[in-house]
Image (tube, rainbow, N blue to C red; front, top):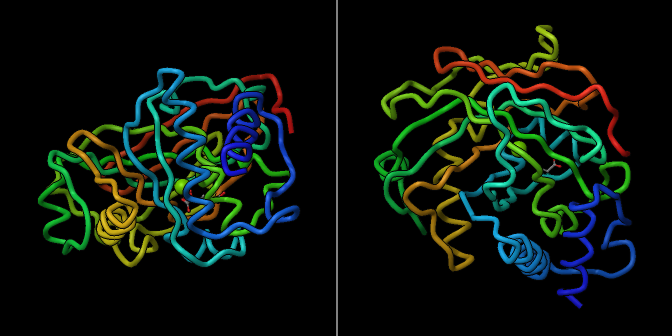
Length: 258
Ligand code: OOG
Ligand code: MG
């Protein structure tokens, strides 16, 4: 049963076609939801995609309130999800994409289990401003906690800005998301679990509990500081993190499927 659901979710992502929430037809546990996620990402890996890291979700109040969910979640990132700086994404490959401003960590050593903030920072190679593109495979972007976990936490794409020194201050930095140079969402890096490093600590713990580890070279997205913003054709989307930098991508003239 879990394999069938994983296959359905994978195909929904491949075809950019939305499906009914799983929880409406059959109850699944949190553990089963993570198992479905693993099985569905395995199908991507079987097609040749590479695991490049993990994403944390619902690490800010703004996100929890927007989606009506209040627990940390985590998902997997593959190389095929990477959006190059200033790339134009084809909206016809998405159901109802949204963008959100984030902070990314790149690791130089592995990290797993219970670690302190200092240990987490010691494993970091570099820090960058980032944008996550999320695209729930569920109709109307509506889901339960289990549904969204099974759907790899809506992950669809990510943009990484210029990597900065691990010594960069990331405490209380203003962060915003701009659409065609107009600020459409703003917050602070400390809206992410009081400090983005706490998200890396939580990532090590959650992924460790799942029997995996954050590895050297992996990218970890700390989670959005603001609510996500729906994408439309012909936009330039930028995330600006004070002192850390900016990153951008664009949307095609064609419309999304949803
Ligand atoms: C789930 C993903 C949440 C974040 O940064 O909080 C997330 C969703 O909102 O669809 O990526
Ligand atoms: Mg996110």
